Length: 245
Image (cartoon, rainbow, N blue to C red; front, top):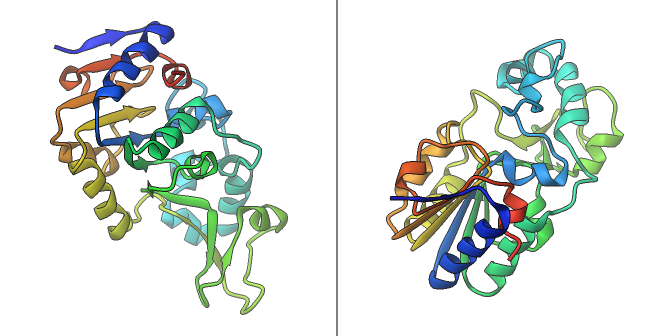
């Protein structure tokens, strides 16, 4: 039977207790990890899916929209998907600290903001790519998010004039096989899995949790998830506060 805690201070205490006992921890996180850094999520009342745009956000973040409405895609992408001013919060920093101590063997993230790496994590599997990598579809030259921000309209490669596409997985695109295999390896060999800031309803990413075969499952998310009943600890509170230990 899982222990559910809503008080942030108590959640941090309990999470620290089971983290201290674990030897090899994997972390699986979603948009909620970065909300404390000022990056909006998608499905909460204040998330992108509840804001008004000329097109639904799900459509604007699709492969088809990128191909058929490239300029409109980039207008949305620059203003809504790139958050260069965001800084790692306590959750990002604690995970990096735990990796440095040899506790964390892998961070599997659905986020594209690069905040885990900014915090110092190295073993990061970015399921949906990163805004910090933008690749010419013709010659392969890479560009930074800062470069994308400074361009106007549809960005083209400075070397060959080819279309530059963000290295992010859009709707109706497949996940990178090497990234998925790395994530599966991290999760399947962990004795503890922490799921944080995700509702576990976005597939195929959420399906990776089924590869966990360890003994301890902790979930840190404000809203209930389909895996709560299977968890040893459920922290229904702010994720940054839960990692404040």
